[in-house]
Each structure stands twice: as structure tokens, then as C-alpha cells.
Image (cartoon, rainbow, N blue to C red):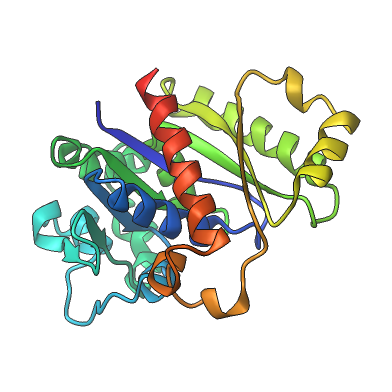
Length: 250
């Protein structure tokens, strides 16, 4: 069954876009039909994916102008990966949709018809918490939380995020589920120490085993698989994608 998923954390700098892009690439490399949708007006996912989005229809066109997903799809460097770009028009989308009923559900309505064409649809979420961010939560079947153990108070950030998700779930989307937590920019010792200090293991979602290491600075401007498929970063994302596939197949 096709899944719509997002990498979420209300704290900036936790690697949401980097994780979304590299997971999308990894799914494609594992021969899963994948669509990455950039929901951030800044458009960092397209830049990282190295996709030429000039003169392309965007998510704004899909949500406001009722273009189809096939109209907006952009081909990427990976055979199994398609992309829908973002642009600055998204900054005005709440105003554009102000008279529409259930406007927070329009993103879900826009992408749900595409589920028949893909195994996985990944929504890249904006850093700022606003209308589009709410829309991404509502549109998703599953949410996955990256935890950067180098940040201050990572356990507090995690538990606050879970509360936000719970509130949105009650308000908008009863089927929304937290798929689990994965750790970024860390090692096994840090994870063991972190887990021992809080109630993470008692929480009702999955802890993924794969740890995403600190990235080589040379890998920050493109998917790591394009730079070096045998690098520790590329291998880690492939392992995490494999874990997610097994998780969904349970």
C-alpha cells in the first residue's frame, strides 16, 4: 500500500530536508516508485536534489490552480524518483485559499490521487510553523522524527514535538500516526546515553536502529548517493530506507 510520509521536527536545523531528500533517493535506488514534494517556499529540497525547476508548475499550481500531479511532476537524476517543486507563491497560499472550506485538507486532497502511481510520497516540511506546516501534518499518513543529539535538550524537543502531533491529530486527522524516531549526527554511545536518561524506550513508536552520521561538508549540496554511493552517509540512508520499507510491510 502506498504511503504518504513526512520528516518532522518543530526545531530548525535537525536535518529534515536533508533526510527527506536522501531518503527519497534511497527509496528510488531500492526500486521503489517515489515522489518527493517540496512544501517549503524556500525550495531547498529542489536545490539539494539538483533539479531544474525553472518554468515548471509547482505545488502552488497543484493546490490553487487545480493542475494535476502529472502536470507538476519533474523528472530527476534517479529513474524511480519524481519531484514536485515549490516556489515563493506558497507564502501567500493561506490567503489564496482563505474562502475554501477545510483548507488545511487541500494538500492531502492534492496528493492523495497520486498514491496509485507511487510506493512512497515524501512531503518536505517548512521550517517555520504555519499554514503549510499544518497542511503537511494533515496530508501525511506517517510522521518520522529526526533527533539531533548535538542539539540542546533533545529529549525536551522530542516530547514537545509528540505533543504538537497529538494536538494536530485530534484537530484535523484522526488517522495520522507517528512512525518512529531516527537519530542524526550521532554515534551509538550518544544514543545509549540519551536513551538511558529519558523515557524514550517507553514511548509507543519505533526506534530505528540506523544512525545517520555527521555528513562530510562536501555532501551538503547534493544527495549523498550522487557524490559517493559507498560513503558512510549513503549507506546509512539506504539502511534507514530499508528499515522503513520493512516497517511498512509489517
